[in-house]
Length: 305
Image (tube, rainbow, N blue to C red):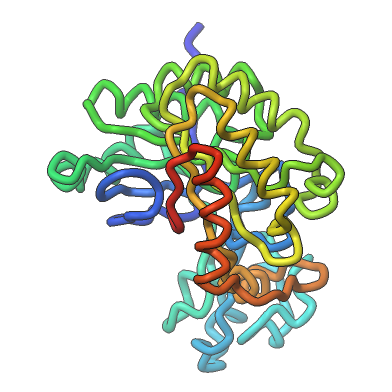
């Protein structure tokens, strides 16, 4: 008995990316994440279901979205959520009707073939630049069957692939991906278990165990450290993170990712509940000081993707 081909729920396909691995790349963003980082810059990737993003500044209050909605949402949804988020079924009809792009559906079901057709459009740029395709999110391995099928397909086409993971994933799926993907971008958000749980919504013991398991079988890992002032930028945590990365044989380099505020705007657009996360991005001289800590541990260190 044959099994149905896996499908994935994709919320964005970003072409000509230069921050998610080597060369010119296409980054595929998949829905669903087991973490809940307070500073998340892709909050539309947290849930495992389609969502509507609203950009009030683009709204001209024409009422097309209200007329298109089959669920009798109040007229107040024009230009924002107005308390109607819980009523939305993310059918996408309002986004189709919106003439200005003020409403957008985040979450499209795609087959492996559809995604391959999309990302191979730029294969000539991958070949010339040493680039390829990166699977990100959300957490791409939360949709492991789909991602693994995509990795197999692209491997057969000779396209370089990378997986950008938070590490809180099934060990079997991670190691299966390790046999297919050329590169892993692995986040370490905090070295301390309790602090990780406080700021990212889950402890890090399983994450670090997965990183150690991956490093035993894969020799191309880029550790990514989001630098969030007041969360993980203290010297003790940075030194502990650097020592961990330096101890793993598969780690090629560390990428320090300075916090930015773009996620706050997205939180409002997607209607994510809860208090906003507000802090200033770290200045460049502070980022250089942090890079020195990792360099002194013997790690090739870059600021940015």
